[in-house]
Image (cartoon, rainbow, N blue to C red; front, top):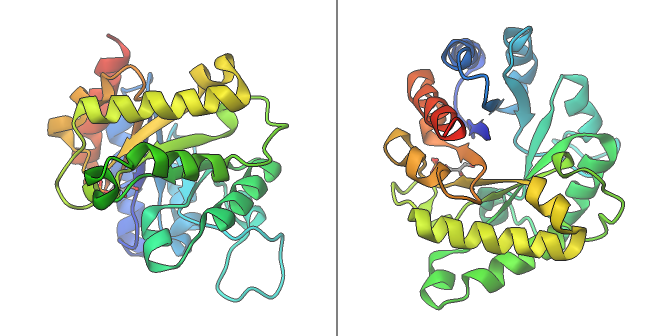
Length: 254
Ligand code: 13P
């Protein structure tokens, strides 16, 4: 089980460190759960220092696929590794929606992350109109297919993570039902199985994201193919995030 907090464009240098410290405390007795935080890029170093010696891992929210060069405003995988990142969120729907990220771009980023040893948390998910017209699996299949393109050499399912984040559930307070989440997660696992085999697919972490909070976390995390959560709003308060971590711990321990 992996519980990751996507802080999006929130916090400042001081409050980011404070939040990280709170999360270390909250997760101290939840050894069965992997915990990660993804602060804004300027605070990665400060949060890394705060996380030193803890089990909480660091992730970034985006990166560019080139090694280095004239790409003003971008950060590379190597830069993220050098400040202690373990994970990088890629293809988040907010990046697709507001910054024009395409499936092709996400694919290049995923390849670069995996090549350099960063674990991409690849976000996929349909919009409301897709779900209303019954196209949700078709849309997600296309996103997954592109994101995993040309990753033939990958051996271990722990080299990447997929997050199913239905766009209509992000920041809206509306959540996919546990059944909707399970159906899509099982579908995603079947797609991965087709490409990488059954063993790989069964070892892959598939996270749910979209208004996950303490009141619904357990029901979602109990689903067979839901292996954790990618949490936005509810990751910005350590006690609230802590409650989700503890829900995951309870589910994990059966
Ligand atoms: P919320 O939990 O705020 O809905 O955000 C989910 C998300 O986008 C995580 O990446």
